[in-house]
Image 1 (cartoon, rainbow, N blue to C red):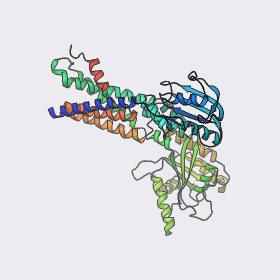
Image 2: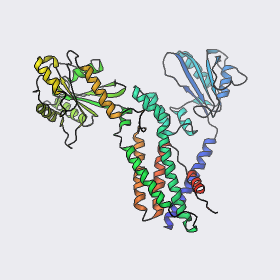
Image 3: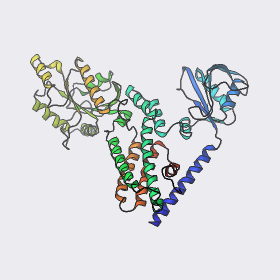
Length: 496
């Protein structure tokens, strides 16, 4: 017991020293950085940004002003080369005095004409100013985090927003960048650090009758509630990560069922070779699509059949590998060849796609009955009726040759994507990073260990709470020991 408590004290002292070191480190005067913040290439306007203590000096050198302009006001001015006095451009300037800026430091934005020569001239002029250097990738956002303007989840949300390619990705990134996910984790962290402070106080001061006896019962209840909330948060089917990275849709079926034709119709380009010769597709053909605002990666695969051709066998192997990792399996069936009955369709799906799966769970499958143009009216009506059969997976009837029914296929596909990912604007904020999931799982494991150690050794139980607190703090990037000390002396009148 004494040894364990000594270790904890050493850990606490090291944490305090590290915290003080970081404070001293961040107070050191930094270089001023500059970079092109807008996209590269010819454009109407380009934005060049500086951040750091010399931003004001650079602005005065490039404009010839005797004093800095009012913050957050746009000013039209001439930009001059500091060494030669040559006119570089006439553009707009915005001055942001720290800490009221994106990075928390003095910042300036130069909105100049977007020609490569103009941009290069202004960048070279900034490079001649003392204490200025080109920014490293992500350094503006890194400084915003270090100066407390963003936590790590907000910084990651900003990165996702910059790379968002669809409407739903934009919504999810904006919500994370607004701080909702970080606020959720901060609330959990506050509850954890409060519980830890109460346990530490009980360990150190219970013999002096300064701590209420029921404090540990309250901590046990709080830990149990946190475990349940964490478990619910983790049971999200990875919808946030799927939405961030793109959902995998796999077209599968027999040879010449129309998989490649459906891929080309959906992507509206000749992504895959279409031929009446069976087995034309021998490798996986991918295309990235935006379906109803949801990002998807659609893969056309080799026709599933037994073959002695080593190349085709490898294609079939790759196709089956993709099926195992698919978010949605699009089973394409040639309705003109397969007998149109529920039993025959289910048997066909089972032989092609192992439907249901070997684990006995129904996969997310969209059944596409293709080649409606080859059926006579009675057969056409029979297939349409079969599409409504509740015993079958969601089905649609279409013709890749004429395009009839493809609109219904896209509509049904969008519904399935919405079912998997949901709307990121509603409900609790979603996990978007594998990193978050890793830390949350470790946090949950530590809380489970607390319950085990609770009756054996309270010091070890407290250490598990400390570990869980650190894991949560690692997600947002805000971990410190000062919070524990503050709560101990706020909630308990020690030394009264």
